[in-house]
Image (spheres, rainbow, N blue to C red):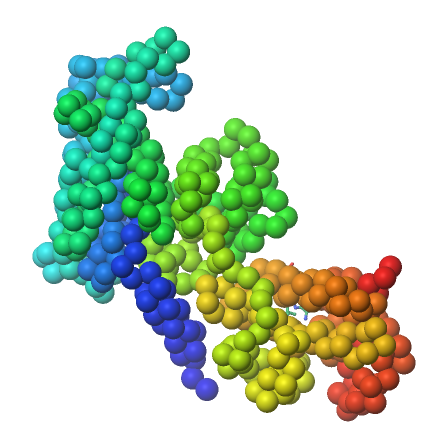
Length: 455
Ligand SMILES: CC(C)(COP(=O)(O)OP(=O)(O)OC[C@H]1O[C@@H](n2cnc3c(N)ncnc32)[C@H](O)[C@@H]1OP(=O)(O)O)[C@@H](O)C(=O)NCCC(=O)NCCS
């Protein structure tokens, strides 16, 4: 066997997502500090690549820190109402200048591929896929003033009135990338400074985006930095891989005072109906592509759709679960089965699906006498330690209870400790159903562990 398996798996995943998302709209809210980061040209290159390969990419650059710097430079002191800047008449031209400067830098980044990638210099980290994409900075946001709030005149600070989806759609249809600076205009042509978070949120919903990416320089959501609910899955380096909106709400409640602005924005987007919101760190090379084209991603995803689920086995899953089980059967960890055995007992099996691919399986066989056997438990090694195995077994225990079984058992040679963690206790072979005892393979010498469901 060669070691190309993981690469091939990655290519499969990438094709799966490419065909699934092609032609879909994705909004990228890019925090201003990202633009000054050495990783920015590579991020732009990846976004240009997506746009050229059929994704409808919309960019909303944040400009807050640059606006602060420009106003400071010109000696204009900003006043705030809460955390919202009051954009005064004298500040407005500078705010517009800063907003468009940032948008232009994004446009320049997207066009950098024009020079065949040389703009990235000889030390370029990412040689593949360079190439230009045209972008349009436009007046895509209809705004209105915030007016007077609690006695405070918000002057030229506005809110999104409407996203001009028709104009954005025309730009996207031409294969170009619309860039939405943090300025909107009233129907009478009066400019307002609008929060880029609000624009990203409004644009995502108005355009029916399937994803909103929040691109930051934060080092992602790490388990070590926050108190987390038990249900939250973490990956390598304690990265929080995905969260349901309920998890996100709990994290915000458990960590009052923590700077979790990205999570707050993600949660709002999720409540507004965006199925998947991704928070990614621009300093990680290829983070957008990895988040988009691989199941495990590179950032944190807040999801509300049927991203993953335990469901009954279908015939078409059989090759997938044989692939999961084959190395384990070879090692003697699992009893040998073939497609025919599995098909015969198809209804006993459940699989754990992540975005259309099967990553774990398990079966519950009813042996009569009120006892069910949990068998063929296998998790894709790439997905190990993420609770898939535990959830599969719990689901089957639940199923056994619903079927009126009084006990579930396993026969195992090497996984007894894991089943003990799940509450199973060693039991005598004599306590197993007669039919099972008759077929017991003495040469294998498995030990029996059981969980009483009636306790
Ligand atoms: C056992 C198995 C299903 C666990 O899958 P999983 O999805 O990684 O399981 P979970 O995430 O729910 O639990 C992982 C925990 O169990 C522990 N664990 C995994 N295999 C174990 C074993 N053989 N013995 C003891 N503990 C084990 C891990 O250390 C891990 O602990 P951590 O999360 O603190 O790091 C998986 O390792 C597997 O496919 N094993 C081979 C097949 C097998 O043994 N099947 C059972 C016989 S029917």
